[in-house]
Length: 77
Image 1 (cartoon, helix red, strand yellow):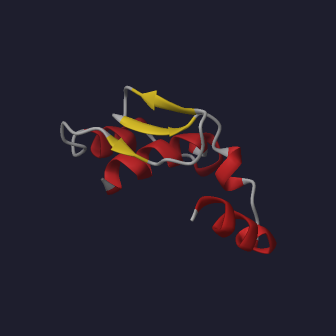
Image 2: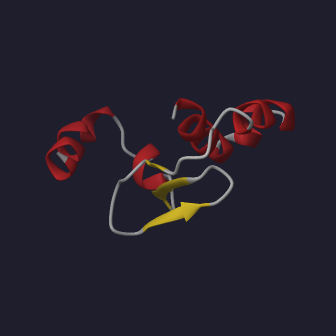
């Protein structure tokens, strides 16, 4: 599960973090065959590469700062 979610999220920051294809390849070979969920809202998509149902736009998740934590917690818990 960790490799799926990590690979998906870090792909978003790939260029900023200078992550290599080898890094993502190492994650991909360890994801197993199960589909997992990084559920956030009703507009989630299925990412075939990572076998993950996740936000289509990670800015929904990463754009929130510490001051917005209470809003996120109340909305999704």
